[in-house]
Structures are given as C-alpha cells and as structure tokens.
Image (cartoon, rainbow, N blue to C red):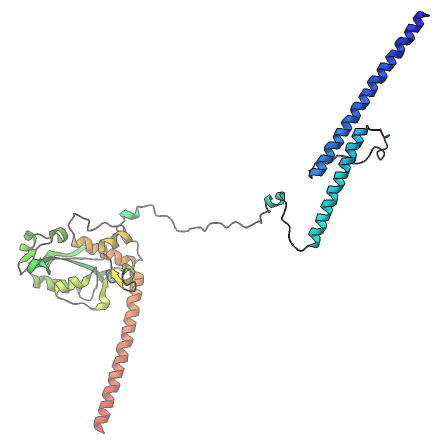
Length: 356
C-alpha cells in the first residue's frame, strides 16, 4: 500500500510540474504577441512603411481565440485608440488639402526623387573634310595660291627700296638701294645707287647700307630709267610704295599698284578713332599672315627679303584684292563717263547760247 501511495503522489507531482511548465510557456507566448502588437501599433503611429504582415484576427483565420492578460489588453486598447486618432487626423488633413486650392509642399522623398530624363538625340560632331597640314606653318614662307599661267605671273613684280639720310640731322631721305623680284621671289634687279648729296646718316641699323656700298653704286638717272623699263605695264607689289616712288621720282597708274600697307584687310583700326584704318608694319604682317620672320631686332634690313614678303602677302589675298580693284575701276569708269557727258552737255549748251 505504501508503494502504491508513493507512486500516486509522484505521478500527481509530475503532473503538476508539467502543468506549471505549460502555463509558463503559454504566458511567454502571450507576452511575445503583446510586444509584437505594441511594435506594430508604434510603427503605424509613426507613419512607417513596415505594417503587420497579416491584419486578420485569429477568429478570421479560423484559429481559436486565446485570452490575453489584463495588462496586454490595456496596452492594446491604448494603441488602438492612438492609431484611430492618427488616422482621423490624416483623413481630415487630406480632406482639407483637397478642398483648399493652395498647394502643399511635397514630401521629402518626392522632392529628392529625380525626374526621368527625356531621351535626346545626340548631336554628332561635324566632320572636318579638310586635311590637317603636316608641315610647320610658322616656318612656311611660300603660300599656297590658285594656279595662274606664266603670262599672268610675268605681269607681277615686287619693289622695295632702301634710303639713307641727307640734309641736317639726316631727316631727308635719298635712294641708296633698289631691289625688284618676280612672282617666284627671284631677283630681277638689285643695285646700290650713288647719292649726289652728302650723306649725314647711313641708317645702317635699318637700311644695311654703308659708305663703301654707295661709293661705287649706279648713277641715279641710269637706275631710274632701268627701273622704269622693268615696271612698265606691270602690276607693282610692295609695302608703303609711296615712299619708294618718291625716292625714285616716278609715278605709276593707281590700278597697277598693290600696296600691302594700304590694303583694307591688312590694316588695323585706330585707337582714338575706330573708323580710321592705319597701316601695319611689314614684319608684323609677315609674321601674322605668313609665319615669316623678317626685319628682326638687332639685324639689318634686306630689300630683297622685304620685296619677297610683300609678294607672298599679295598671293595670299590676290583673289579678293583683284575683285576690289575691278569694282573700283568699274566705278571710276562710270564716274568718268558721267563727267564727260556733263561736260559735253555744258559745252553744247554754251555753243547754242553763243549761236543765238
């Protein structure tokens, strides 16, 4: 009997211990569910994106409902009331926003969101059909120009003169050297000239002329006649040819002169009067337009070199230059014919008045 009673007591105690363990597990699950519900309610209150995965209750899912503790029920009720209050506030604010015409500021995530870029057709770079020159342009001295016949080339010569100073302080200029080159830069005529007056300034640092050069030079009259024969019926190219013609004491038709100092596109605007054009120096034009270095500082000038540079400048602008000369000749012819008609009418009217 004692053994049976002891067995029964041990079984009862074991059952009680099992029941207590089950109750503890149940209470732990309830507390965990209560904490999860509290976290979900807090996230909904804050407006977070994480919502409970399934809002269905246990009764809707077909599972038996379980009782919760008094404390967890209180927390759930307070959370539900706060959620309903926040939902009512959101609904009222949305209704006021729809009713009022004023705009509301966009949420932050919408402000920072980038708008989708429109598709645009890419512009391809323009193709340059011109071939790049392989030679160094700074060292080039010959300019590529349109082809002309040998007869046309023979019509062009370039002239340059060097002077020395005569008179008090060497202010007046006298001819000391004459150089003429053809289209290709070959020398046609180059000579020093005797000066009849005493030279007061040889200007060697510019002209390159010395006393020994002009002592056995050509006479002025002979030089002048030979230059006239070469320049006759030819187009003369040069820089500041007015000074050269004055030193040679000769003239030439205006339409047969190509002066690089007087060509519009080779001139610069005056700083004081922008409408006025001023001539540039030959060495500046040769460097800017041709890449040639002439008349360097500390070196003597060479009339052959200067004449060649003037010819190369003319070649570069020949086409536009000749069109401008043709237009000027045409206008000049119109003016001359108009003046001739006016003078003829004037003399005819005078004759009629005299006869009457």
